[in-house]
Image (cartoon, rainbow over all chains, first blue to last red; front, top):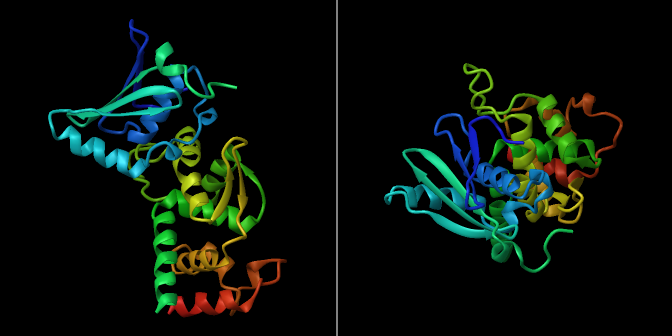
Length: 110
Length: 154
């Protein structure tokens, strides 16, 4: 369940990486939601709201600001995953790691 | 003086919460119909209520969120923001949206702000005064709201 303009790929190391088209692809927050959902094999609506974990406006502008700095990534934790977001040449790349260390936290899935 | 500061704080909350078109649409639909919505149903109701800017008409669906993206944006960004501002009540785990009633000052301000917006249909719903015969069966909730709405509308 991914929107147009977002290419999701499962990598060999267990991470999931998605690239959003610079033109017509989803925005930063949507790209994060869909990529985490793909990594967890979950419906994006079943995840807790991203806005409760990070400020969406702040995330988008921080990704843009760091992208100007040779594609440096913004990293945070969300839904028991390690999330990394960077912008390079306009395209946003989201990498999600749900390694056992990352996913074994308080709560977990019901 | 302190009441002016309070009004400023209310404006900060309301303007931030209503700064994006999907949030204005969501607030309008929920407050106007005064009923519960699941997220998918709210997304459909927003779409049915009319076009949202920015909707570049030219490139087919480009520039306009798909219904899937609208649902995800509502759940992850817009509804938590409206809930935090006191404009709707959002149950994050059940994913059900309800009208908010607690913070009347914020709700009044939001209605006044939106009544100056350029959507004539919603206008009729918020101004209970002159000629809003289409407002329907519900009686106007009180004069405080209409007075402040009218003043802001000038």
